[in-house]
Image 1 (spheres, rainbow, N blue to C red):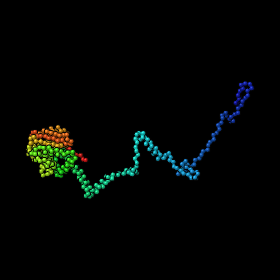
Image 2: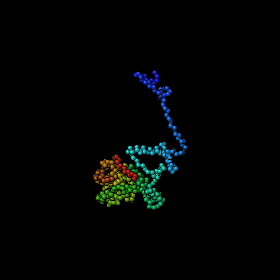
Image 3: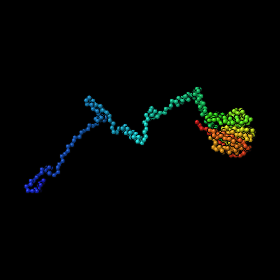
Image 4: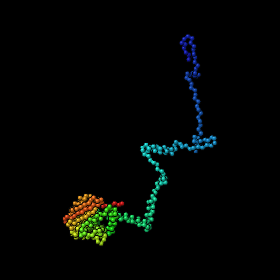
Amino acid sequence: MKPFEVPPWETGADIIEFEPVNPSGSGVAAKEPKKKKPKKKKPKKKKGAVPEENLNVNTAAGKFSYRQVRGPLDSSDDDDVEDGIRAMHKVMSGRIEKQRPLTQATKGGKKELKLKPELAQAAVKAMEATSSSTPAANSLASKLQSELLGGRFRYINEQLYSTTSRKAEALFRKDSSAFEAYHAGYRQQVEKWPINPLNRIIKTIMKIPKTAIIGDFGCGEGKLAQSVPNKVYSMDLVAARSDIIACNMTDTPLQDRSLDVAVYCLSLMGTDLNEFFLEANRVLKLHGSVYIAEIQSRFEDVREFVRCLNACGFDLIKKDVAVNYFYFFQFKKMRHVPKNTKMKAFSLKPCLYRKR
């Protein structure tokens, strides 16, 4: 059979011959080769040259200008993106922070300490006052003196509350100026109190007969004797005046059963109060009265305090614990108790003043 010859199906059929497509005779149509586009040669860039896409050419005027475009690796762009991401994260988490403006104190990454004008002026005035004799110098000196006086008062006060009466007596004998320093600080504290308990005791004494003899134990500056018409024996560890008896509160020079009234106004200091009241029992007459005024915070248990005085021969007549800051008591001597009676020592809580 010839190539591309169709056999006849009927008589008289024509034979159709096809022209060969592939002249090579392989029987496969050959593909036409594609035309390659010529590649454009890019001009070599010189160092420091500006890219053409960044140029804005003005052909009409024959001039050109250019603008600088930041590349994808520019560090400032990355910082802006990171700042934007942080801001979005703060907003999504509910935290919005206001950007603080830069000040002269924070510019340059360094903090500068600035003193307020008022404080600076006060410091300058204080420095000038120390080298002059102006009223400002006197004010500064008085302030420093007040602070030193307050510190010494707190030290002496702590010693008196934490030791026995005999050791306190030795303290004042060793340092004669300690007593005056203590009472100077005491006067400052009295000015801060809502009331002065001694004034209430003075009003009470004014109601009793003028013939009653009074013993003021721990009199300080002896104000009670100057305020009432009665005969008053003022006693303290140091005599601030000539009419005050310098002695220990546990061993006074008074005779037995010579007093009608014994007063303890803020003077129950020390750790041996049992000896205080045994001495009061000795010098008081039968049915004599004891008036006590003390700071409220010193009492842990009022009933225990009353029981201790009952052991020393005194019965409670009246108490006033409703007054703010101070407690007031009145006891009466109901029986004699020998001074050499052995009993457990008792005391009140110390009253320690804080630095202000």
